[in-house]
Length: 71
Image 1 (cartoon, rainbow, N blue to C red):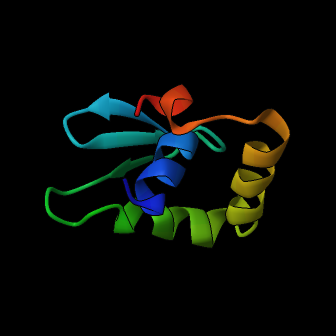
Image 2: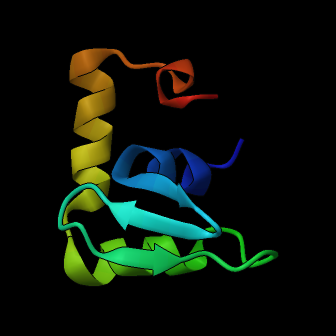
C-alpha cells in the first residue's frame, strides 16, 4: 500500500461514490478513478500544511498499524 493511501485513510472518511470527507475540516473532495490520491493529498497540503507531521506523530505515539485504518 502506498503512503498516500494510508494518509488519505487517516484524514478522510469514504462517503461512497468517489466522495471523501476531510476529518479535519469536513470538506468533501472527489477522488476520480485512476488519479490515485492526488486530489485528497492536494487538499491536505493546501488546507492543512502540517498534515504529514500530524500523521507521523500519530503513528509514533499511538502505534497504529495500517490495519487500524482498514488495511
